[in-house]
Image 1 (cartoon, helix red, strand yellow):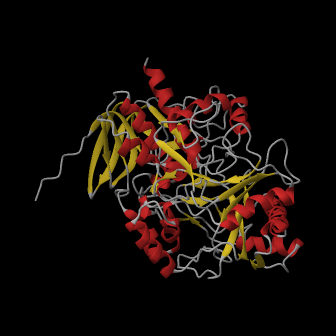
Image 2 (cartoon, rainbow, N blue to C red):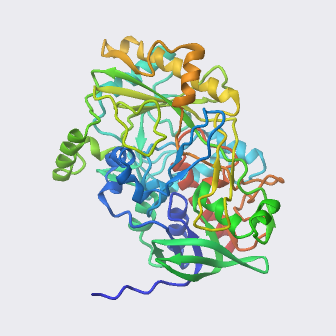
Image 3 (cartoon, rainbow, N blue to C red):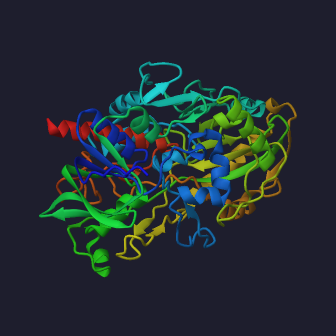
Length: 542
């Protein structure tokens, strides 16, 4: 048996987490010639379930498939949502959550980034982040003022969308008077469009696929199945990390910086375990305080309410035999079946009556039936077997804010996750109004009689009854952000350079630094944050 290669224990940069931001910043730093060790708690992403885009459906529907790829977190009972305990999926695999997500490619609204800059985060305005987005993209339409070509992440549209998905695009424009967009990731986001995906030729383009496997810089070492337990801070400076590596504890030292990219849950938890956080909270757990910072505050997330309609122009069936036949065909002719693409096919950004200058509602169109009423329980849920379209009516600018706290000083203990979903009544009202807008869309003549009935939640639920039902139906989109907020005030954990306040040699680079959530799916913004982080680190070296 061949001897396993020795793992390195020192590098210029130690990056904790190989997900959307971590793989990106690690790949770019190594590409510039620095030595980089990337630490990932999960196993390799070189497996069919991760690599084949359309298998994301079974991955999340079948607990036995999901468990090896997910941290398995659950939030605390949500008092504003019938005391429900909701799952908080986080990718525990190379590529992190970019290896288990739906591959919906959305940059966010340009106004999001200008608002970050207006809060004092210099260099994070729309034009500045546009340059980072362009570096990361390989968009199928080629390069222009807003889009990039030749980058590590391929961005495409599904080649053969369902007829019902195309009808949805026309119906949305017909019913609500919005524009049909060719590219919602360009100058303007408002309107309806076919969805863009970070997938191509039957392959998921996760951050690890683009920045680790394909970029393959010679000075990058990926160490999987390594759990980071603590950042080592000596005399106010981060000098390395303590890890549990397949049952053995060891120390990995960073010659220049430690970069936390463990996500909205992991980065905040690691900071607190290392003595960075609310001083009183750390003392409660017997942790020596290094820096008294509001770690774990400002946590927020997108939520959706799913409406499913029986639509005869959508031919997919959510059954095991249907997926098995599709997989057999896909293995014979890769890139030619529904499994070559994300399960989503269209997207819209619209305004409710609450909206200001930009759309505040996102619609995800899924040409399948969906779980009802929710997917809280870790079981395989039944779905309607008729041809269907489901719209995830999505709250993209929640007013509700929650917290992340330690349950214990034991690194193996899951933290206390409390998103405080729908604690602000405006969030529930937006989901209710958005659901009513979806019904207007499905009443459009653009469907040419293909819409037969509303399967879930059912047309009889209206007004307050609909909103009451949403309390048991609303679900996280798994886009948590904000626990290590970037800013220049007393609420900030990191500055605009992503350096942790009060600790030298330590940065955070992932969704946790977002001051406020972006308008749309967060995977692309997290890859952008990785690109921005690499430029900040490299700029500080010169």
